[in-house]
Amino acid sequence: MHRIACALVVVVGCGGNDKGTDMATLSGVNPPAKSAGATSFHGMDGAGTDVLGWTIDFYSQGPGHGCGSKDAIASIGIFTNQPAGGAQKTAMLSTDEDINIANASPPTVTGDAAASMGAKGISQIAGDLMLTAVDLGTDGKTILTISGTVNAGGVDDGGGGVTLTGTFEAPNCD
Image (cartoon, rainbow, N blue to C red; front, top):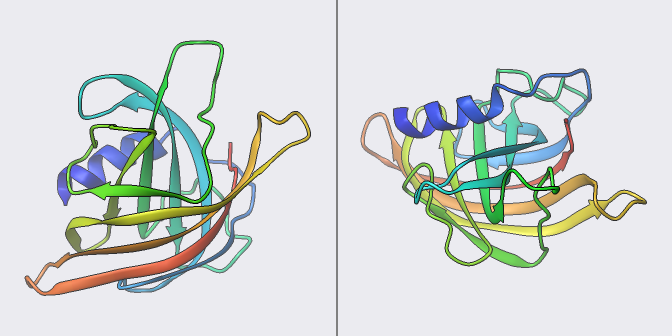
């Protein structure tokens, strides 16, 4: 868990602004999540390739909480197969795609995307992430909101199994 949390904190650390979060649910964490926000990043995947991606941060505060704050209770890092360093500055995401949440952090991207997840007090998280909507700006290149569902499992500090399920509407916090 410590490795996962550290990797996600490095990614998230670049965010931080006054934009507000939107509605989310996430069971299995204490306290449960009530809102979420998204920030773009570029970083190395498990194979050492510098790729573009997005982080979905879950917060215990309700919608409107400051996006990019450092008090997330859970985070999902979505690593894409889109290389960093080119003209494209943020990753584009597809809807209705089942993205594997790997136990490794960072995950190795095979196909279009892979994800890793960290949550307070939970380790060995693996499961599935489904993006149900990606709302684009009028330019067709700027992601405004990422919506989806998460269904994952892990182990709590006492060694017991934990199920992490929920939905999110995460506005772009960049």
